Length: 373
Length: 112
Image 1 (cartoon, rainbow over the protein chains, first blue to last red):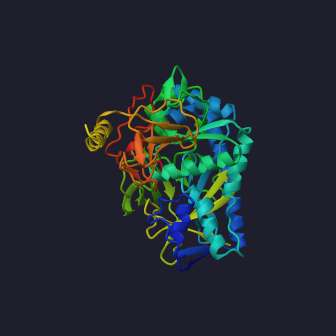
Image 2: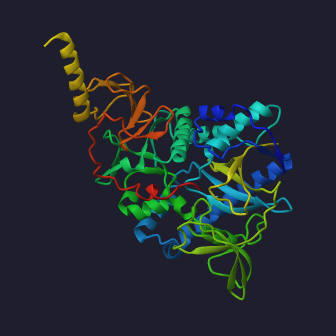
Image 3: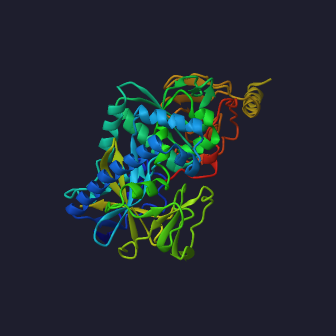
């Protein structure tokens, strides 16, 4: 993989805004791109496929065999557990998720985390970087079948003319942009869509209604399950089909990485991860629930005593506890550290988006960088 | 009252009405449904985006279309940027009694 500097298209801001990407600010500059080899793309695709199988098995073990673990580690109340179990047993469909990989010096993708519930950076990974490639490198390829996979997944999940509401925090322009993009993919699949703020869902006698009085039966939510469980357990038990389904609450936390390591200790893609502080080693210490790289630090541990090597990033996460994930020093490319966001759509690998930072921890100051191969 | 005085009075009344009368938008609008409120403003509903477009006019003093989102009682301009409500527009809102989700999202980001 190479990082190559390039001159931005002179009219790129106008072009990407025409596609609805109006929240790019300093996040999309197109001053560089990554060029991958075909075998590197194949490695990422294989790793994504294997990783998804392993995390599904980890979720199965936890849901079917370890209710106590869910209550103790994730603080899932028993009646919410029963809803999760029902959702899992019914095989309620999932639309998407995104693995974040770092690439080890030998070229092996290593799982940093799985964004199972509310993965964003979708529009830029799907349409924006493809438009960039078509403009500048139409003769090259890009590992990106994200848009087509989303449309196909909607078709697989719902017959034409089904109604699906799309909810989230519309005050946030990035959430609003991601929601509207997802709604457009559903429309392309023949689905009737409504986009609204999640605060305007009205719960009445176990059913949700939109402000026009229409019952919400199928609902895509860009809003984390852990927040929903905290805000209203009754709402989580209502008669409604959610996308992502509630069993994704078991995957959308860092603690599941420790179960993956326990079940698949020899997988080349899984870094050792622990719920309690190990005796020795260098670790990335991450809150069980954390977003945008908040409250993450790199620590050295000797005889169970830890010393910070890279200070904890800002944030207000961590009260639910931390995991210790073996630290792997990322490879710098022209002084930047890339993270490969590899999309799983309809259960299959669908493409990648690359974000990079000048620090080793990817946070909300990262930049999205397009790629070709 | 001569014609000039009538027009002046009418304009003052319109301005006053704009300041004091709240707009009652239809509760179950259809896609592309048009509505003209008591202040003479023209509204067009987009069902997919669940928003009303308020068309610019001399009466409301707008030069570009503004969008009103009844679910969140918020406004955006034609670039999609959140803006304050137009100064002489007041929409009658009723609080959602059954709202249970959304409070965390006002203080934290969902981005993962």
